[in-house]
Image (cartoon, rainbow, N blue to C red; front, side, top):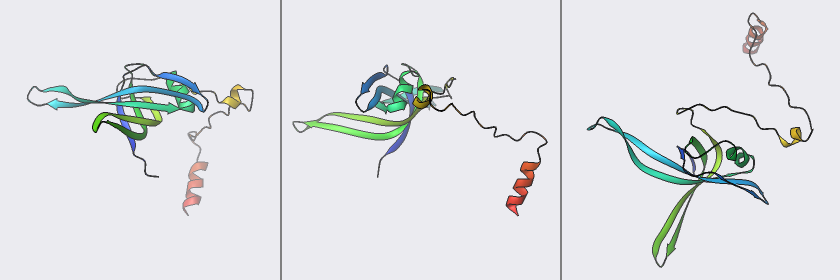
Length: 154
């Protein structure tokens, strides 16, 4: 499958529109990505051309996006690029650049964000309890990990 995967960094230009469809949740919004460059003559940063993308997210990503991002938020979007054009009467009438999002998050280079894990459907419905996060770090003074590494290497 030859799909063009891109990563776009920009600002949310329109309020995300959430829809509940027969296939699941869906959300869309416009992303404005503006190039900036240093104008050496003026010695200041200048805005270049702005590209606009329509970002589409589905299922759980759509639900999380609708509760997490707003107009003006700096975001990073990763997904499949789809460019569509229409020709009327032999003349190009419009071109659209859409991103079918795989991942969307706040751009932490330009601010902070507080992450909240969502509840899975089986946990919310009284299914299996959530498992605690394992302790990945070795306590100080525990040399058993060192011995296991030495055995694995030899």
